Image (cartoon, rainbow, N blue to C red; front, side):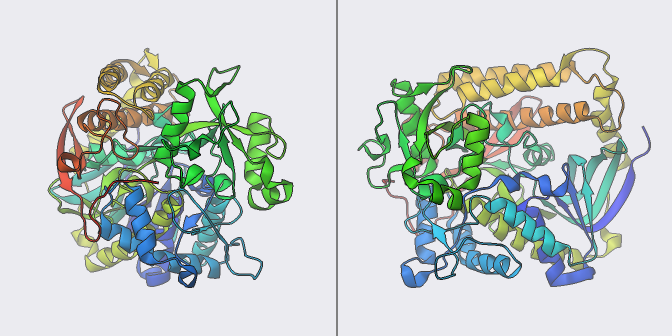
Length: 586
């Protein structure tokens, strides 16, 4: 392979979703051409998974109607099962109204009330309608608006279809990023004063998920391998309404507009005392998902003939065709195309699907990446779903994800630019030649193997393992079995993963293998952390430990690699600034 060339920017942003684009826009609008920016994405920029966000973005817009920062913060902290860091939550809720207004001024077509003001709708776990929306295509419009705004500026460059293989951290300092230019089939080093990791989630770890096939935990894995702790990886959100059989998201906005969940007896089971009698279908997602799976396990579900997947019904028929077409047009299109049902006439088949990773790269409330001792890794930031500030704790409320993407992008954009302006280019040190040689061996080594097991077989078995043992309900014996299988799959990958395509140019077979390696790293962290946490909190529900245990577990898990197939686990206290934990009822 050709020698590794170096590309220089003041700030490199890894990922081009809402968080990455918002960071780029903030750098440009505050500092213009004083700060040179590179945006690296394994996709064409507007194909980032953020375009799939549907239902809304949470913000306090109408305090005169009863909403407030305190109410948004309380709902978020209670929804997190009190694992959220409260200073980070306050920061997000106070910034969000400004973000909505900025996007409005930049041209985002928010849905409107009859009087012309921006509309908001109810979302699960929120005590006030504060999900600000653009029909049911909110993420797409946010992406489009941010990209159009970015086009107004010079001094930035996009690197579409570049696959990030690793970041380098040495002596507590960020040193650079390695990435493959897929069109050339060459490995490059990005050298910069600062980097923002905004590479999204890891939902393709599971076999039934709302995520695009490209969401393979790359950001978590490159940080993990660089010695950066992953915080709370055991907390994976399962969205109640993934359409059967595809798994594509049916937005919570469908329930926010008045949709019902029904079992095979036609009952609205969410109103029962053992579910959420006051919130019903708009309880937080962890509660709704558990109630749905309980209905299925107790025989009150339906079964998909072709796949055998069991499901329940999401009924929108009573909303009427006009409201569905006005507020939920994409939901109708998805249901017709992927389930063969028109929600105007028939209920939609749904079941809980892997949807969000509450945990992520360990950061402070300013999204500076921290080491295990809480020290900032100089020059390194994380934004969006890949980061754990921690705003979402053990369970994220719907519409807070795009909110955090916007606010964390705003925060990291300013801080990364300020840091870049504070140091000289001559002070930037790149990785050693030996580190670069190791990277070349790691990236291209798979092409040298003459036979073995295709990576997609390993990935399929991994996803089935996660779906079976780390789904909505968990227990110690099952998770131990799952962990053992993960370790076996990691060994199989190391010893026999095989890439049939040997041409380095546009080698999607190689990319798939590297993505599988990333998923295996994330799976190890999730499994070890989940098995270690002997309580039920938020999305982490253990049948063998069904109660929340604040005395022993009101703390964040920090996971670091140890050897080939083990981890070390330490803890970080939850930052409680306003409300002490209480029993969580809805």
